[in-house]
Length: 266
Image (cartoon, rainbow, N blue to C red):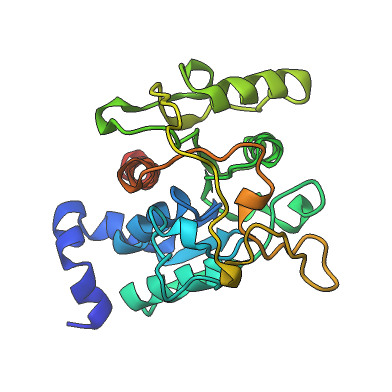
């Protein structure tokens, strides 16, 4: 028995040979590999996904350690997608992991041919870029899944899945609907992971105080204004508290939606 065959023996017992082959051959891209996207990526690779693209411009900050899979005291300062790629290849060395340190934006979206993917996963924080990905992904051939806001939440029992226009109680979802109505509506329906729970921050917002992670000052990469080597908290208007179990569940549910769709598709 080869190493890859051994890794996925338990998965194959549950799903069967035909579905496992479908899982191995499909292509997935995840935009944003923070508290939600990093766990989604790990779950997909542990489930047999071999062809995965991960996209994020950020570097690991000490404040990421409480919730992001690849963030540890040893990886602070590293490029997130590179650190995550290394982690995923330790799980399955045969996987084809493409790591892109980029921002998905008006300036860069044309570099992504979303039609080449079977699944597009949105775990982006930025409202502007998230709306753009929704507009573009819903016009592609790919199946599209999106994460709504995962911060300010504690109760795992309140995490749900619904079609975008039926998401309720989520400030990010409401802001996205307002923006899309004013700009360009999604071309098709898509499922979202969300929670109605919205708690309040009880602590104070402070910088992490760690020079290695380049926080709070943003540092732009030489020669490329889109290559931003910073921790996002230096640019956010408001920083909200987060917990590992809620962000991870959001990511796991996104991965589950991909696997469920592969199971149901013919």
